[in-house]
Length: 135
Image (cartoon, rainbow, N blue to C red; front, side, top):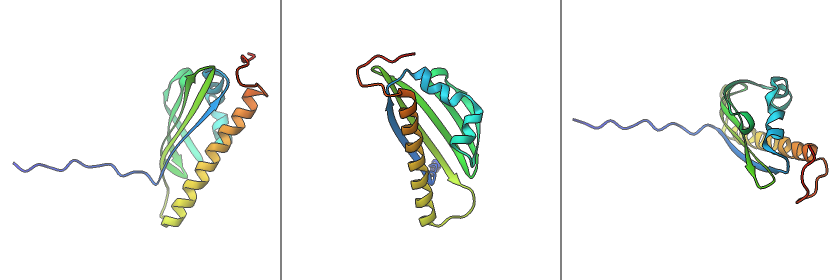
């Protein structure tokens, strides 16, 4: 009996992971992503469908539109705040050269970090490290 090789899934063209510490509770960070209207603001060219609502720990989506794949924000409690983890595993729609894929990945990575840093600035509202959050 011949063994069949198990299919190995291909890595998506865009496979991003980002982490940013935000000095507020996970529920505060997760609330930013609960309203579907905010999704269009953060990811205007993507259509998101929730497949896992993890409450204060975040959301998981299937992605369509300019990309096809999955995306997640995970709000992990760490010390007196939250590590916002961002994952995007998707392929652009249509044919792309290697150079275009690299540019698309870099653009998405920069946008993800900018989103996280803007949230940090807004949600921390000037809070200094070690000072309890005001809720």
